Image 1 (cartoon, rainbow, N blue to C red):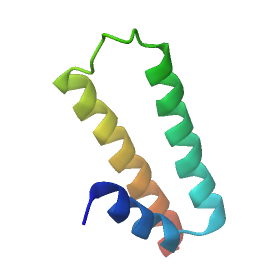
Image 2: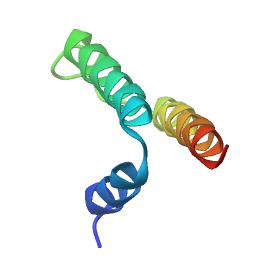
Image 3: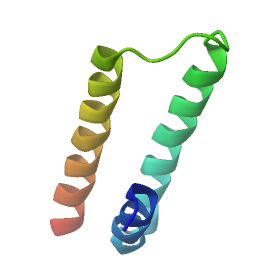
Image 4: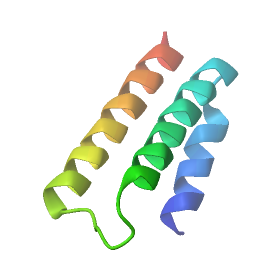
Length: 67
């Protein structure tokens, strides 16, 4: 199973308000990516930071869902 499919499965389990939070974060990442120069790539450190932020948000969302 590909990563985007795994994300979709988890996202489908969240309540709509939490899905909206995930969408806001994805849109934020897209906007940040658009601001980069076309030839500029993400460093490994930046990629790990983005991944950590996403995992933190998922963890927060799942904690809220479990309440």
